[in-house]
Length: 188
Image: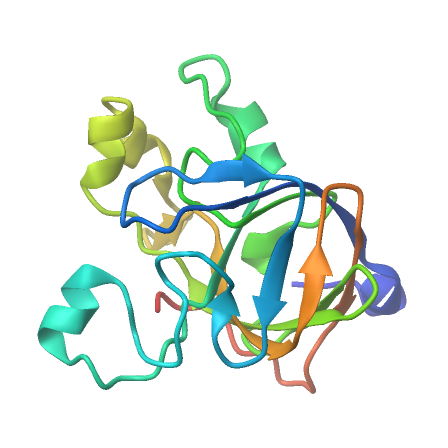
């Protein structure tokens, strides 16, 4: 999965930050967002220590919020550009990145962003049918299969906030991988 020689030098950049206080599909770009330890993105609909995603609240409103912040790599938008016009924030992500293959990170990876924000990666975003309401056919485009027929979810990763801090476009993202053996990302 990772080249051991390059593990300590993985760096990326934030290209956009977004939030929405309402439970809507897309989020509005901001000059900065504030990540709050144990809660998520201040002012966002998913802010809180317990789950805020509507379908999960219906199942059990007391489960921990493992989806405090959503990150998507801009490279996905570039991959889909021939068929879809997608801008940062439009797929509901809080942080749009460039330079890191987020989908290849193992569970429990630590991302340090900007001067002080720290995120622990919890898993993959599971895209739902709402994505086709945004642009028809997009759900199929963000799902794929590997050579063994396993489902690949390309709609970003989720995380929890370990240390508060402001995040803005242009901030550097550094990656600290967990101890081996690496645990593959699963949907959360």
